Image (cartoon, rainbow, N blue to C red; front, side, top):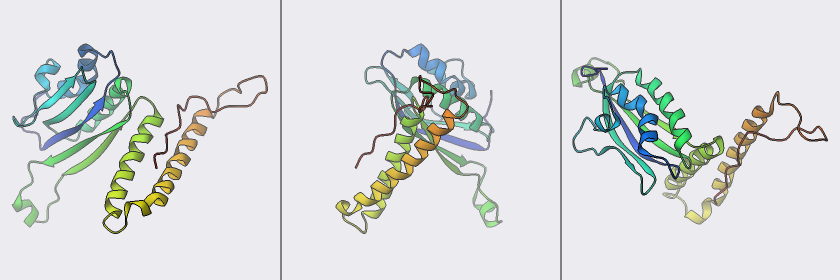
Amino acid sequence: MNHDNAPLEIHLHGEVPIKTGTDNQAIQEALKPLWHYAGARTLSEGAVSLYEEEPGIRFDAAAGRLHFCWTVRGDEDFRMVLDDLCMNLNELSASGTHIEVTYYDSDFDDEDETNGGESRDDFVMMFVGPDPAAIMQAQRDLLVHDVVNMMERHFDGAELSGVVTEIDKLFSQRFDSLVSSLDIGKPPRGSGGASGHGGGGRRPRHLH
C-alpha cells in the first residue's frame, strides 16, 4: 500500500504494558494493521518511522513494554486501522493505558490559511486494556492527572481531594451502567433466580 503522496502524516506515541509470555510473533500479528498500512511485509520493516530521529515501534520483551514513537503517511482511512489495532492490543495488554495519535495535514500551508482554508490536523487519545475496567481506570487516571495539574496552579494539592472523589464517582457510575448493560438479556443465575453483575470485569480502583 503506497501512501507517498498521502495528505497526512500520522504520529503514534505511547507505550503498552504487555502480558508476560507474549512472544515476538504475537506482537507482529497484533501490529499487522500498522505495518501492512505502511506497505511493509514484516513488522521489522514497518516499525521504522518516517523520521530517522524517531525510534519507531519497539517491543522490549524483558520489560514487557511495547513502545510507539512512529510516524507514517496516510489519510482518513487510517482511523479504521486504529479500530483493528485497539482490538488486537486489548488481547495482549496487561493493564489499561493510552496512546496518543496526532494527524498533521502536510498539504496545508500558509497560503491555505491566508485564504481561509481549514487544516485537517487532529488529535486522538486511544485507550486499550485487557477489560473494560482496565480501560476506564486508564481514562480515570489520565483525567485526574490533567485536572489536578491544571488546578494546582490555583490550589494546593491537598485541597483537591474532593475533586478527585467526584471524578471517581463519575467513573463508578459509568462502570455500573456498563455492567448493567451487559446483564440485560442474561438468564438469572443461582438457585434464587437473582441476576448478578456478570461479564463486566472488576470495578476500577479509586486512587485518592
